[in-house]
Amino acid sequence: MLFEREIMADPLNAEFTKKGWHPVYWIDKSARILIVGQAPGRKVQDTGIMWNDASGDRLREWLGVDCDTFYHSGLFAVLPMDCYYPGKASSGDKPPRKEFAEQWHARMLAKMPDIQLTILIGSYAQRYYLGLSRQNRITDVIQNYQSYLPKYLPIVHPSPRNNIWLKRNPWFEQDVIPELQKRVQAIMKES
Image (cartoon, rainbow, N blue to C red; front, side):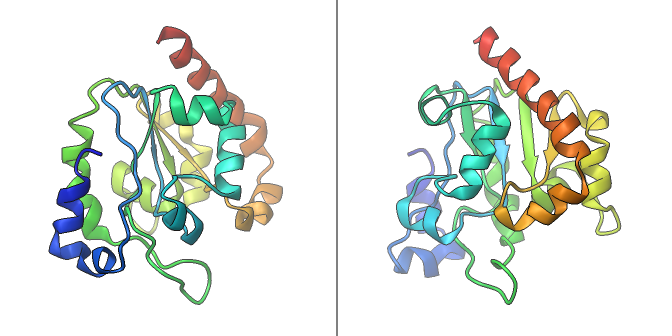
């Protein structure tokens, strides 16, 4: 995979390379839809298959695509804020390392010139790509998703840990998800 050896040889990633871990991401020059999330979870790191967990099941449902389309159509690329599982924190996983995206994203994005929509999943991706400060509430960012279109579409992380957020914010599944599916379907039809 493009960049894999360079990423593994980077001193920034020495601890992961020593464990025998490979970076988890997928870039494809034919991709039209880019998904930027935070970092792989433990299960994804172990399998090497991005979004290969309950969060991925929900993400594909939100996108309105099946596994075959998601993994094999060449339309989707996945570029996490960090390509390695960061480890456990007291509540959930540790945050992705900031320096990973700073060092690698621009080079990886340059290999995907035809991206039409970038889906920003969660606060780390949204803050980085939208230039937000910590004062920006992610709920407000997602609720105002239309102001970031057509290039970006910010969404909440599809983790089951966000079920309470989804219940408190029914507008997300009523308004944002149909817009997401409409845009994904339009891009797929063009390709």
